[in-house]
Length: 251
Image 1 (tube, rainbow, N blue to C red):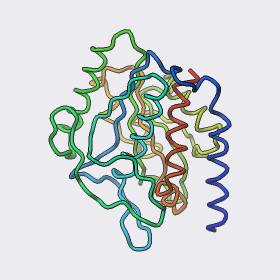
Image 2: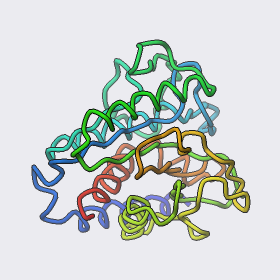
Image 3: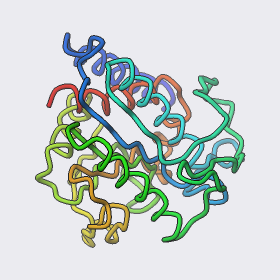
Image 4: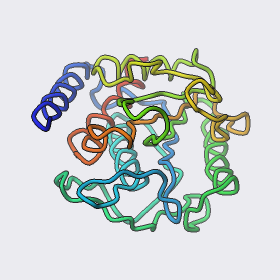
């Protein structure tokens, strides 16, 4: 099983490397502003899985992915603003070392420790809406990054939840992750509020978010052992970040 998982990850990384086109040179995202919204954080660790008796928490790993996306966007001349901040940088630890649940993430808007609930989500949206106003001539996107725990135990891979499945950003992400064969087999792109897949209507993608092109990405599912292994692997997190960046480049 471990050998099979390693082969799948290697294939995913190779696929992402080959899909990064010549357009990904520095400056290819000039004119873009992207709000990156790492899920949960602070006093709200989010979903979790177990690896060798240790709790693997969602917020620590999706924050790392968001940092990698920010680096790649900025390297290509775009602007990337994160809704939460922390003192930690990217962590390329070996997969057997589980990130500690530090609970130190803070809201970018006011520096308070991140907490769950609508009030916290409104802080995130306040930042995004201010960015929309500040950069009216830029191409804009909102990307929330999460790791799932809902659905069937066999679910694995990436799912994109969109305010509208016809949004360009949703279709671009479907292509970039699809090229790497990491999308879920069962309806990889669904609309916010799709009860057929246990997805409640997400406040973060509601009309209070003024950015038109907005999605939430579930990078995997903690109910799936392979996904719990993938999220701990920094090589895979780098590949996730490349897929997200590529979706912006190729549009």
